[in-house]
Image (tube, rainbow, N blue to C red):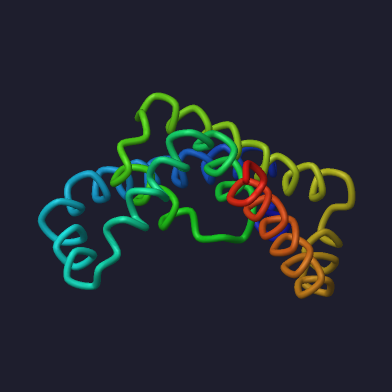
Length: 150
């Protein structure tokens, strides 16, 4: 964002649009590919019961789970495909992905707007710390969602 010489907010808007479009394609792939490809593989491996339980959890806690996936370093494509395969409602999916990605890219655009080109240097210099902190937050919230109700 800082290197492009354009408004970071415009770049952030394009990033959100592209990210949401890609997530929608992965959601559709999850819907389309589950029955012919994924379900038979899970059945052969004896994983259908675990998958079905994960699907129930996704439908119950989907908003929080998808927001977490969309806002952290976890690959959004995996979460989007899983949401499609689990039958998570598309309108809710679209809402949470759009909001979470908008927040994520707005934070980056805000950093660039505040400190300019130094934002890229700061992010690169602390990349490992940011990744580890994001992964830790992701794991804590994921563990709470999975084990919190037990």
